[in-house]
Image 1 (tube, rainbow, N blue to C red):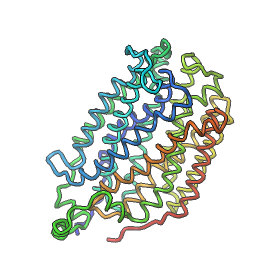
Image 2: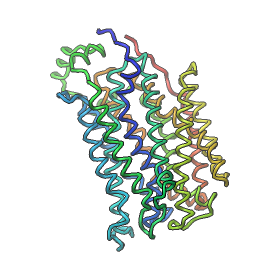
Image 3: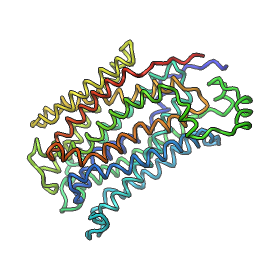
Image 4: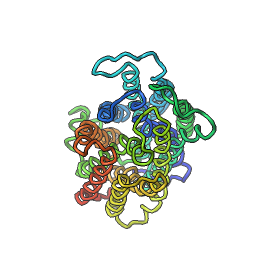
Length: 448
């Protein structure tokens, strides 16, 4: 087996730098989609339904990206072609999505939604799908090219860049408002501050992705086999005898870590789905006393959501520095999720916009753990042959809980009296359940 060379800081930086731009796009989506659809006329009880199709597309697309990129060896690389295609599509959609309200779609169509909401919905599907296509190769390239000893460091650096991108994306709307771009618009239209945020996010996304595309040189098949200790001849003989294993067969033979970490993921991502969906309405009602989506107060709360999400990103960056100091990854996981749970629950009781900084700072601890620890635990339990396929399948543990949470969101909101802030209490309870589930995770160290 080839001795696994130690990557420099800048080698790992280049591997993940494009993630900075991708995460700006993801932050703009997560912080503004509920605001956009509420502005277009969606009822609060409908909001969670707009979030179902994007993760559903992620469940379909990401395993396929993993499967086919495992088999892609070309001059551009193995994972990089998918990275570039996803980024280009995301840029195009980011230009069109915030303009949904400016199109002449006033009449009510299928399911009582107007044309603008249908246009926005399909734009959201394409945006989330393309972001997933662009995002997944970064996780795979770390799994491909980084040794087990450096993976925690590499994924922590990826988490740092991810949160830095989130910070920029979350603050864009309030920044553009501050420099004088209008933050309100006629009823049913998206404010210019949000539109320009998406434009700038799209430009940064493509530049960052092109940087990684140019700077990173992926391994050829022979180098990859030597790096991961794969006997190519035996692998080819096995595939000739039984064929290449399909995704379902790989899933049946997934390591125990895949399933136990997946259980933790289920509770965590359901919790964050409710944060993304109901933070805007919660903060508008609790801190601005605003329920009219066209009012200046509601749109000001929409900007403030970006600010508190940025505080969450800062908390995540700082907590990511603390996580490696824990002797046990499982202990770090539990502590992080419990801190985040307290943050979620506190949001429901806060009526001062500045006190929310503490709540979302604490939520950042959970987010830091969710970005780094699951992939460290999983990739250390995998062999290199099907790294992309397993990481693609593992994305289902991110998408499925979002689908379930979105499908049940309207019923849950009704059960808690229609008060959107109470949905953040449910999110806190879900994180507590996630912390308890960490008990079932086995830390498996890969043997050479």
